Image (cartoon, rainbow, N blue to C red; front, top):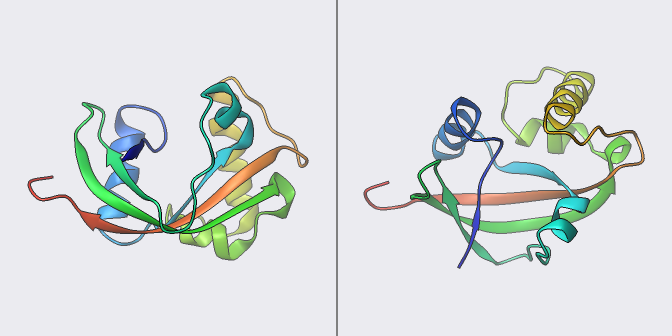
Length: 127
């Protein structure tokens, strides 16, 4: 089973994992370029992934329910809302994601290709 790590290590990853476990986060967005850098294939509908904590422990199993490639500008409010991070508008979501990726060293523009995933989570026993 492949694994998924949300956000960056530390407080952000812990918060995002908590949102998943609470059922509030059912989507995530990644840079298509990261798949090439990591020589990873895209997730596929029905695939199960281990959601990892900072220490590499599985805290949940995610079942992928949707995979879409789109540009940054094409991300919908429905997808942004499903990310469950408390954004109150698509503009707020975009600003927050731009800041995150810029801090990570990969600034994005409206044409940057993304992968939008939706999933359902099942907590891992003992996780």
